[in-house]
Length: 248
Image 1 (cartoon, rainbow, N blue to C red):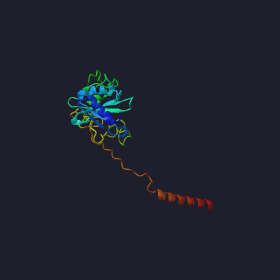
Image 2 (spheres, helix red, strand yellow):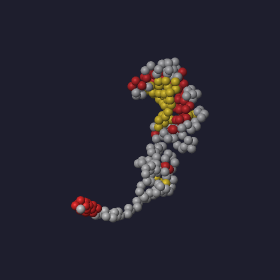
Image 3 (cartoon, helix red, strand yellow):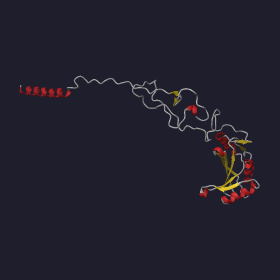
Image 4 (spheres, helix red, strand yellow):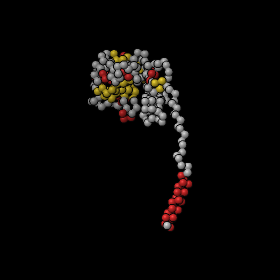
């Protein structure tokens, strides 16, 4: 079946449920894409799996897309091992209450994907019995794949190079400076920045740049100013001494 035929078949199976079929990009890898309401989410996956013409019996992946004010699109890709065609099923949940039915009872392999989507986007899957942290530590706050979540692209680190002249081993090197656009550690994610002095790098209070000690004036070596004439004069004296010794 072509992607267009797959999409029409899914819509026919869901009648009278309102569903919209389209075709994704990708040319030879294009997929039928069917948008369904959240209330028909689990029934749609079951129908696509059990229909003899579709027979999408292989669960590939499930994830979400943050559409900001529009909510979250929950997307699943199913594949037919018998007919060698696939389908993308998609439903949109509101941002205030991002909830949709779990499909673990239909495709047990969806358990891992629903846990990850819940952790990264904050989408709840009703009926999933173990929506526990999968990739992040338990104390982590927020959902890092939401577009309003601030992620630091780099972490400022202490200067790893040699000490500057005049800096002691215990005094540290240069001040750590955050790259442009990277918030202070207290401002990452959803944690508000603490009140107090402005911080840099690892959160230490900002300090004024250290002034280098003035170098002492350089004094010339004894006799350095007369090296040229002295050497020339010594050579002249040596020449004369050699001449005198040869004469004697």
